[in-house]
Image 1 (cartoon, rainbow, N blue to C red):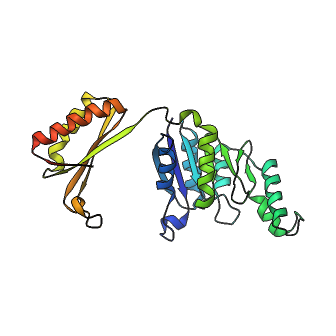
Image 2: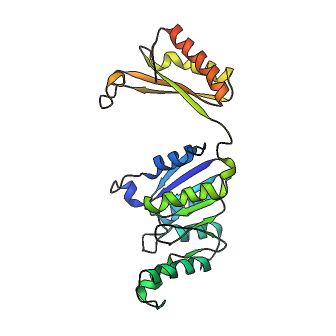
Image 3: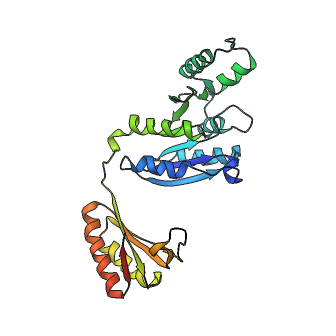
Length: 262
């Protein structure tokens, strides 16, 4: 089982807002011994959202979807999720209760036929059969369907809701597969020179993946990072990583590279 993330919103693709969801979801998963396998960005285009959800609903992954679950004309995610599964949209009874409690707490008019209350209740309309995801910020829930978890685009709401999903539905996966990463900074070698070594490492240690991140130098970070270097390492099961890293270290030394441990 893998975890994926879909971030929806024209404002992300236009640059009006910078995405913060990908790094935060990586952090939330990492704190539980889990990892993000993939992420996709989509604009507010119903056809593309529907096609993407049809594809991901057909797969085994757990998918978080942020954005587009409001009730303004540019919010299409609820309808697209329903269309992708051929389901009708209906007002979820528990969502209705939670939104009604929110309306009462705000002290405004209680008449459900008032335009502002109709608008609020529309945010509780989900594909038939969906379960709700509680929203501790303002009680307007998200929804869950087929291992997909739909939350608002606002980080203050989305991130606690994602944490709730991870801790409520996937606690059995927390730290189930120990995973570590070790790397070094390598100077004086080109990436092509270390590629055969990386291939040898992965052949010798099938549960380990080798990685290299070349840099022309990062003046902003300064220090050793300001020099041209390669961030070279291995990741995977702890005991295998330890042996693979020792082999990697020895191989870089043999090639004449300068190593700085990080």
